[in-house]
Image (cartoon, rainbow, N blue to C red; front, side, top):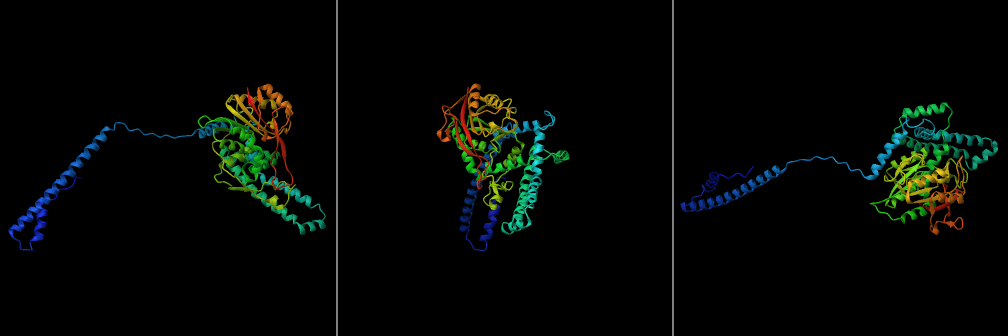
Length: 461
């Protein structure tokens, strides 16, 4: 509303009420009237100015409204490249997991997943079978000797404590199962039916694979595994850090046999790399998917050494807990699950670098590994290797180091010079270096598991 103009009559009435009680001369009244009229005139001018400003504002507002001819409503969702890669690979993974994909046998991805879920689900039962065996052995000691043992070291209490700690570890195993079922879209009914069918057949779960996957929380993602990682990672990371790259044009790096993926995440932390890791073991993949879901550092703990009583300094060391993860996993790192030799069938020449850490000796057919590495690298791409030659069960061929060098050179690799800090030359006249690297050891134990790991950098033709 525009400002209201005051009434002259109203002003006059106020004047009369104010002045009537007094005896005034006609001249005084005239002077007062003149003053009032002057004030009214000023007020009227001010009101006119405000009315004019108001009219101008209305006119300007009207012009602005008339200028609006189109209204656009947009709903834009921005997805960064790493999230897009994750979504695309998850879709491919779900397709591979369908029962209708391929032959339904023990090598089918879904059956391997259900087998691993079954094993984690039965973590406590399988380990309590072992503690029962230890109890039965203990009973074979003569009663008098057992009495001495009980009075001095309380061995039965040690057995009881370890059984309780297996129950504590079972909570972690069941969390891995629960998250895995959610991530892979496995219903409780499907898992229950799979477990029932296999146990009716007398099929035992793989206790060792579950234990190894959980112990990799220590090797890869706990403070206690730091020294072991420092044995293995620096030569690989140093080689990558010296490669020319930019954030706008990152180098594509593939790490097959990545386990729980700490090296892949360390490569990602260097910046300028698009990192893809690959793992075949569903035990490792379940553990990694669970680890990737954690939102707080050192938020989980378990007792990794209670299933192996040899080489222990103290019972407290045997029973100690280890917290993880020491740092959080990055969503920028992509995990592609499956067989390294087949799952990247469409990625010929895609990668700038392939890093094989403790991997090549897992091959049943080494030649297939080497050919696939060569195929996946772009011309001029680099292959970085660090690891032993500890061949697994039933390999098709077992090559010595000199044979590996000769074969891969024939396939089109040229071995390059490497830094002396990465070990001594293994074979005189060649560039491959060897250095001692610990693997999956108990830092407080009396034994040391280590390899003379072989390090090389080879360039594809």
